[in-house]
Length: 193
Image (cartoon, rainbow, N blue to C red):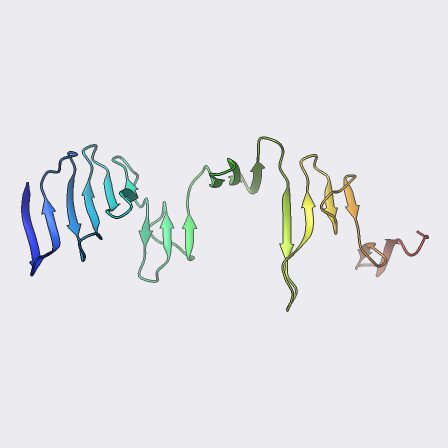
């Protein structure tokens, strides 16, 4: 049943519905005939923002959600699990953050483990972690990779051993003692080591 409706000419700008055919209570904002958003509660008690054009819930907060589930403060910072975010996005949770590729089911988890941070990359057929950077005026390129066997590659995306360093000119490993001002270098040049 419609209990309140705002119209401009023949256009319905806003409509408050106490009940709906699907059992939901919603307020409809409808600037044009085929556009609009519903804000309200589903019959299960969840708060929703419903896209009328796409016919889908774009935003849902379920009944029983904890306090400070989602907060946007006066500085436009977003807090999840906190009412006072200290950065553009701050998440407070013991289980971590998950990024999921819905097309391939690959997932990356960032988890707090005591005083440590765990980064987990999972894919059913094995996974790698690649680190990429770009120079001042160049394109992004891979600099280091950890493959599914635990091998680390620097300058190569297919490391053949626990540490595999590849470079076009004299790849070097340097160990330096700053207290005694001495260093040890391993490098390959031409056919020599």
